[in-house]
Length: 82
Image (cartoon, rainbow, N blue to C red; front, side, top):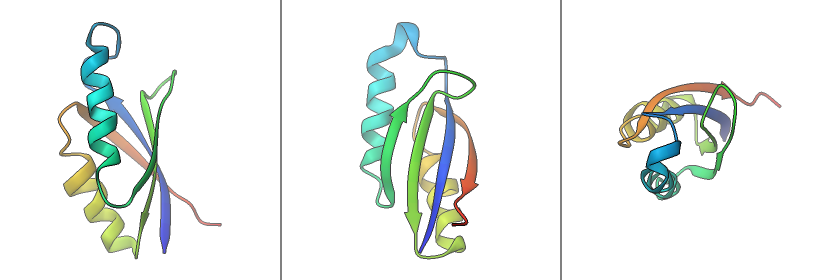
């Protein structure tokens, strides 16, 4: 089992599009392997904790699923090593 923290930026910021922002969170939580999603302040807009069976599956989860959610502009992945 591999776990990671995924830091994401939301397209267009949060202010005037708060409903769409919440929709992005809901969509992320529907993805198998996404354990938690938090809205945060600072250099990133969203933080997710994700799990996969191995690094290949983690890569697919992030590249094919998380980054394809409309509204996710970019991501930065921090694999948890212990």
